[in-house]
Structure formats: structure tokens, C-alpha cells
Amino acid sequence: MRAHPDLMALIAEGQIMMIADRRDYLLLEPPLVGIPNYLEQLCFQLQIAGITPVIAHPERTELYRQEPQIYQRLAERGCLLQVNAESIRGSEGRTTRSNSLSLIRAGLADVLASDAHNSTSRPPVLSDVRREVVHIVGEDAFREMTELVPRKIIGGHQQETAPER
Image 1 (cartoon, rainbow, N blue to C red):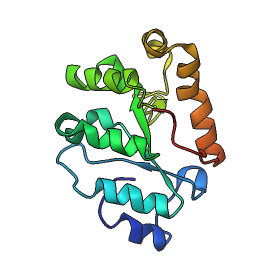
Image 2: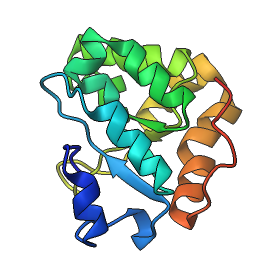
Image 3: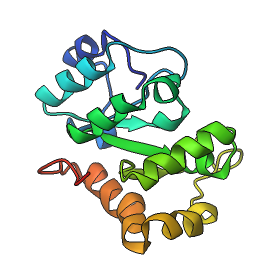
Image 4: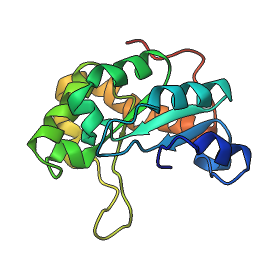
């Protein structure tokens, strides 16, 4: 769901679909362009409502390029950050690739996802970035980001505490 200031009202009206049709997690896509001054407050409101924001591809946003510490704060407060394999591949450009690797090195990436939209032009493939990510964080962390955390999200089991940062 694209992040915007009226999102909480839409959730209250039942107009927003959550991950796995539960109220535990919401995939939240911040705007790629611009600095959304409402993002931290929105994430806080979601958390107060018992919803964990899973922030999609922060590495691609202007906000990350201008104020990366905002994502650090959100991660420290229990929001999950999802980095896209496409970004690591370099498909989104060098800056985005560098940003994605920085998030992984800093231990801020909770999920590594394919950003698949279909099985032909954007298939769900992580295997080609596996070696590079494992080299950075190790096999256990790679498995956590690609299997264990996603399984918790889909299963609707919120994390008891924020991941160690």
C-alpha cells in the first residue's frame, strides 16, 4: 500500500488489505520521490493499532538518499525494512544498489524480496543475489531475511521485540 497521510482512515474503514489478509503486517510503500514528512508518524500510528509496517524498498527512495537516519529510527522502533533483489542486481541504478547494500551491511534489512509482479517480466528470483548477500551477512542472516521473517509475516506472528540493530 502506498504510504499517504490518510492511510489510517482507510484502514479504519476496512478499505486496505493487509498481508495474508490479517491485521498484523502492512506492506508500506513510501513515495520514491519527495520527502514524506508524515512517514514516521504514520508508522507510529500503525504500530499503535497493532500493525507492523513492512517498508518496501527504502533503498529506492529520495528520503533514503536525503535522510537515511529516518529509516534507521523506524527500524529501531520495530518497523521492518524490505530490500529488493532488483536493487542489489543494479537494475535500479548504482546509487540504489549501493543503498541496498548499505542497509544490509548495517543490519537494517529484515526482508530480502524479489519485488515480483508476475512470472515473466519480473519473476520471483533471489538466487542471483544470494552469493553476494551471504558474503556480506552470512548464511544464517540470508535465511532469516528470505525465509524466516517472511514466514512470520505471512503467518501473522508479530515479532515480540524489534530485531537487534
